[in-house]
Amino acid sequence: MSRKLFAMSKTIGVVVLALAALALAASWQGVGVRPDAEVLSRVVREVEGLDALRSTLATTFSGEPDRSTFARVCQPVGAQAKRLAEENGWTVQQLAEKYRNPGHQLDAEAERIYRLMSADPKLMGLWVRTEMEGASGSRYFRRIVVEAACLACHGAKEGRPQFVKEGYPDDRAYGFQVGDLRGLYAVFVADQ
Image 1: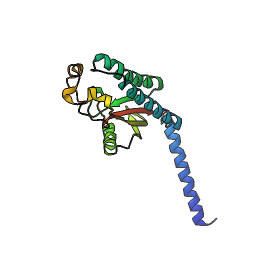
Image 2: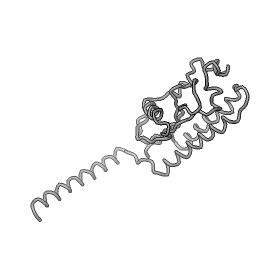
Image 3: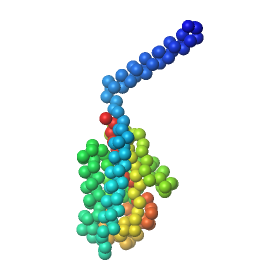
Image 4: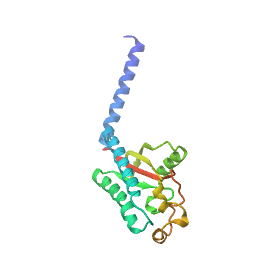
């Protein structure tokens, strides 16, 4: 074996050993395995179902919206998001720049994705690798689009129902038009 070939094979052997040691050290430190394609596909399907529920429920009310409209239209979507989180161990959120509930305010990462989706109306969903509360994982963002039925509560500021004005004095979720980016669904799946 030539001296050059021997030196190269020795270097490759050292690199392979170093990589094996790093992999072993990572497994000792509890570094997780990324969610597989089936889990990621399931997240997308569940979010699409959540948005379909929102869209369907929004078209079921007529007349002037009131507290019962909120209970029939908005609360079931929130309840379904909570169920998805509990059943799967995911973090499921509805986030917005112009929020009604302060708990739905965009975090820094969601704000970055919101800006991307604002700039590109064709961008419907996006996965990112990230950390949340110290855990590594994958986070899916999906756009929420304003439909005509949404304008009953999210249209002109002065046109909001009285129960919204009274119940949400710091409301920011108004002034939308059909087709606007209302907010984002965000689902975090931790590595296993």
